[in-house]
Length: 461
Image 1 (cartoon, one colour):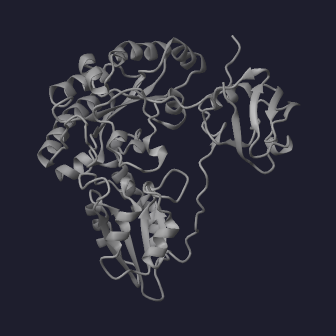
Image 2 (cartoon, rainbow, N blue to C red; image 1 turned 90 degrees about the horizontal axis):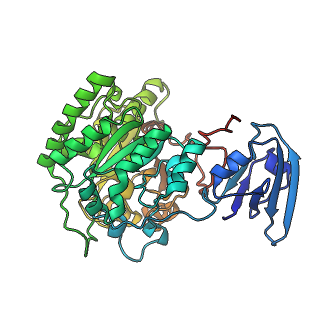
Image 3 (cartoon, rainbow, N blue to C red; image 1 turned 30 degrees about the vertical axis):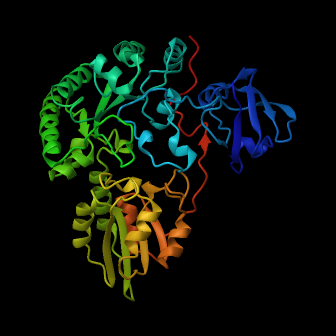
């Protein structure tokens, strides 16, 4: 068991009242050791609490108090998992971590495969490192939904793709989740020549048969960088291949919508952009169940942009103002269409699609752009008054790119102020109201035990 290390304490909270400070470690609650914030959440649901704390100087103190059942602690932790994140022991043929450039930040080489992070934060897991106790805990704590990397329902092929014989246990594992009433979102990393074609049809059919526990199925294209030395020979999708996938999956979406009123299976934006096909309408994403997985990001971005523009009646500048907007190459046509329709007094917008030299030109998404590539692209022409970069390219909770370049360093290199935007609405508001838009401070990555509580105290039976 590990200890939960306090990062911050909210003002006016129970944690502040108890005198908890950053650096304090929560050892146990009512003599119960804590593996993660899930254990902490259930333990803190009691009304009478004995909280064992280890202070930064090593001294331990027992804090005994009464609280309301729904009263929150108000503490943030340095990690959601106290006993160490479970790493991935697979050897996936398509693993992106194996394709990261050498000598980069250590965290980029970490492969997590932890069902707790799947429940708490939507991380996808293969379940190859899970045992009986894990499935019992999922059922007992009602940890749902989970996010499962399926890839294929051909167990022999799955074992090959994941590089472990344990991958062949997926069918039995999904049966366990179904029996426990656990819901899950699934994904397929589609690799040409491996799990596409007829195999993809079979996988979609098998996963659709697991509804309603199976909530959605996302299909994303394999990502390949220039750092693939010693890796399994894979090839990326081309325009023709992407168009075939769009047509193939479209038939299943039509079938599913006729049966259930929802598409169930959804394609990553890259397939439509690569194939030159129009994006599905917003209603076809059924509430965007896998938005964080890149499913429907472009459509959601457009909708948020249009909503922000429709509500804005005060856009405009007294003096000429020019802004350069940075993005990956795949999303550039959509950005350009939005900018072409933009009419704001005295505002000039120039789009700067950045080729990914760091990872390779086949990597086209905005979220994998590096500071160095952006600096190179922006130095090619006369700088504008301001620059906007995609926040999705930052390390979580910090204004730092994957190559460790800080936003402040980029701003200095560009010779102008640089800000970041994530959503379509945020980008529009920055463009329309640069001088009035609030500046957000980057905070450290933190975990609040109550912030992701889709779980509550179990009722006594």
